[in-house]
Image (cartoon, rainbow, N blue to C red; front, side, top):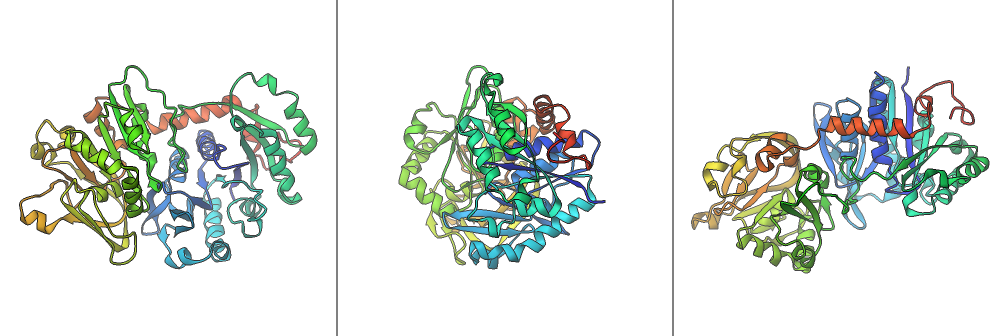
Length: 504
C-alpha cells in the first residue's frame, strides 16, 4: 500500500519549507511510522554524499538532514534532481546522484520531459517502502510562467495526491496576500490539495492577527493551522545560501571566526556547529572592511566553492586576498576547505574546461589540476602526523591523532608543487592521500574533507566544548510544531479519510 504523502509548499523561497519538512519528518517518525523525505528538484550548492545504488552520489543537504530526522538512511531517490549553480545562467545538473553533462547543457525548459520519469519513479519507490513520505516543494507553486514545465511542486502533489501545507514568512509582510494570491493562481484541482495555511516567523501577540485568518478561510475554505513564532536558534543549518547574520553568541566572546562568503560558496551548512560553541562568534565576511571590523579575528576560513576560479577572482577584486595574506603573515590561523584549499595553493590548472585556470593565493606550495571526473565519497582519516609535524604552537595541533569523518565532493586533484618541493618548500601532509596539508609555520591548513566541525572529537579538541546533537535538534523541531499547530492538524494530514473542507 502506497505511503501517505504530506507536502510543504511555500509562497516564496525562504518561507520555511525546508525546516518545516525536517520537523514533520521527525514528528511522524516519533509516531512509530516509517518515514522518508523527498524533494524532486533542489537548487543548491549545499550537497551531501549518500547511497546511490552500489555506489555514492550527491543530494541537497536539506534532504540529507530530513532523512536523518526521519531515522532513514539518506539515498539519492530523496532528491533525484540537484541543480548546482556555477554562474547566474548555468547550473551543473546532478541526476540520481551523478553529474549529467548532457542535461547540464540543455535549456531549462527542455529538461522536464527528460527527468520526470526518473523523478516519479524515485517517488513511487519511496512510497512503496514507507508509511509516510514528507515532500518539500521549491520556490512557489504559483509561478505561472513555469507551470507547464513544473516537476517539483503541484505536478508532484497531483502524482501522489499529497496533503499540502502552504507556508508563508509573515515577517516579510504581505503574508495574507501571499497566501491568497498563491491559492488563487492555482488551478481548481491543485487548490483541492491545500489542507492548511501556516504563518511562519511571527513576532508579537498572535491574537492581533484576527480577523484575517477567518477572512482568509471565508475566501478559500482553508484554515490557518499554525502560527509559528520567530525562532532564530533552532539549530538546523541554513539552506539555500541564507546566512544567519543574527547569531547570538552565548556568554563572553573568546574567539572570532570569519568565513569568507564568496558568491558561489558551497556546503556552508557544515559550519552550523560553530554557531553553538559558547564564546565563539561566527561571522560571514564579504569585504576587508567587514573583516577589519571583527579585529581581533582568530581564524579566517575559506569555505568550499562551486566555481573556485571565479570566486578567487571575486576575492581578489574585493581586496580580500591581501587581507587573508596579511592575517597569515601575522601568524593568524587560516583554514581552507575543498575549494578554499585549492585557493590557498600556487595555481589552478584546468585542462578540461571544468572550472578555469587561475593563480592561487600562494599560502601553500600546492598545485591543483581539475580532473574530468568528480570525486564523490565518504572519507574517514586520522590526523596522525599533524601534532608532531608542526609543533604545539599551531592552532591545529590539538587535532593530532584525532580520527575525522566527512565527505568529499570535488573535481580538483591537489599535489605538492614540484618545483617548489625540489627547492625545499614542502607542505606538511596532515591527512593521507592528498586530503590535507599545512604550511611549515603551522597556521595555514587546507583540507578536502567537508564536515570537520561535525565531528564531536574535533569540537572537543579545538574548543573544549561540544554542540547540540542533531537528534536533539530534530526532537526540538518536532516538539515545536506539535506545540504550535492546531490540535489534531498534523495527524489529520496522514488520515486517508480526510476531506479538504473538514479535516483541519
